[in-house]
Image (tube, rainbow, N blue to C red):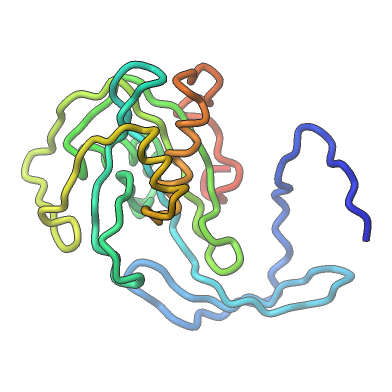
Length: 216
């Protein structure tokens, strides 16, 4: 096996393999587990079990001067890992037909009581492509301001959850030192820190999302 230098402009190839058959192994409250029989061409057919996910959005909300911003964090209990982890505002795309940007705006208000003047697409991620179909789009929100939804009540893990601002550089350090673990938050924070206050090259909030089958 040889490892050659890849050409510039590297990009994933979005090319779903034909599904010969599908069986729902588990039907859940939010997502399902399915078994697909997949035709891989010369490699033959294989069976793959995975979580069938609606997709989600998340928000890196910043305040402060470019290059010296603070990022908004929330802390939620996540039972599968038994951890109160620091996250960024996020939520499922579980409203039929809802635009991802609109969903992100809603989540920021619901979870942080904030709106924002300027929105951009920061990252598009597969959270665990070997066993989960989840696509998540992380937005960057800047020039934030207070905003509330009338009669919205936080329940479950979101009830009285801590929220607060932290220097972006310090949260990036916490990720690299293994003190925070939420993958979506780490990806968003490191990407924002990498840009060092220059967001001119980011995609607009309504940019196409070809990796997500619903928004191609």
